[in-house]
Length: 153
Image (tube, rainbow, N blue to C red; front, side, top):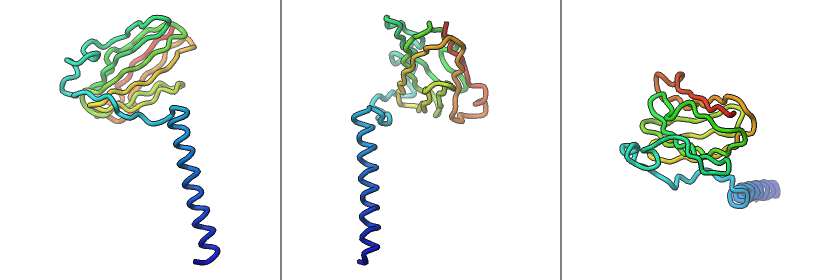
């Protein structure tokens, strides 16, 4: 092995180790890891399974809310939700049919919602206004009509 090959191998292994250390630190120390899909649900029984049997906004107190949503054929259930300014909202979502995406432009809310899995994401709405919630994952011929709003007053 030539000296140049040894240098190249050392640099390559070093870059790989540094990458793994950074990803590990972000995942375990900063909690920035990808969702682990720990919570699953039978997509055929979404309407019979709590909390999705009664979707809606739940007041947890201290300006914290849980928004239980189901996504299906070009609709969010419930649609057009209203929360107070400063509300911390935990979105708990699942899909009844195909893969959907949830995005609220201008925020960090951007998640894929798969049938059989429960997706959770939290956001604090500090500014009043009307926020568009849209599906950003092509889900069929009516995909462009799949949106709703969350009004912050």
